[in-house]
Image 1 (cartoon, rainbow, N blue to C red):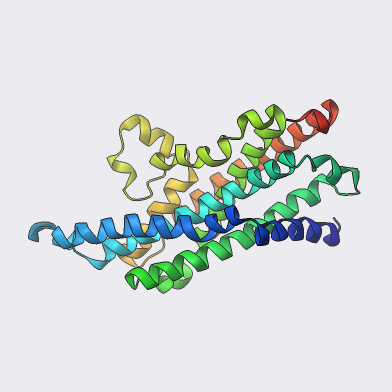
Image 2 (image 1 turned 30 degrees about the horizontal axis):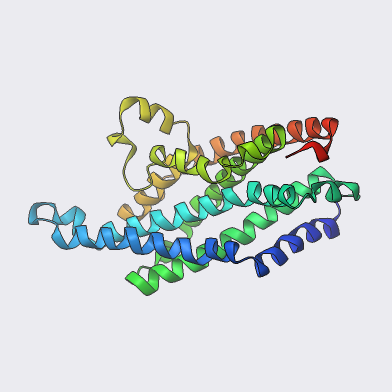
Length: 268
């Protein structure tokens, strides 16, 4: 792989970020709104918690777990959206053909997306954690090393979700573009972002066990509540994410080859 071509992919979308107000809204406005909405909700529950439940709902840990869940979800959602949205951007501008008329390889295109995911997760984590501290004096990385592995597992989740949706778009065109911003939302109720998997119906728990996100968010809450990292949940989330990432990458590559056979200009 040629690092220069990978850098060109990254630079192209960084220029897009610089001039596109929609992308800046994704980075600043949406995380701020979600933090205000759910953070204030958890603060309200804390203030009205009855004495007998004060150990759970009246504890600062409750607010910390809720706010951290919001931040982790924002990171996953933004990373997952980055890959299909960048693909759609090229389709809307009819410039995907221009990319692959150059010496750019499929692997370099993918590597550029992975690097963009790292940049996106860094920006989103920095912005969201800053808002959390300013609004609620919550320091989500007070547990340091224990939350970072779950953050990296979250990155793997965002990649395989993004690759899967990008594969659908390359196969079926922009008629599937709604999946770019809805697939993550569909999976959210089964991901145990704010509540344990055990309260879900049995059929929903079965779905939840197949999702690495449920292990990530439950592991994150375990770190906050006990100060200990559950290596089983971490290993399970990484293993499932890695398997899904392999299949999603193969799915994307297969549909890219199919699209080349049909012609990139036919993609609408």
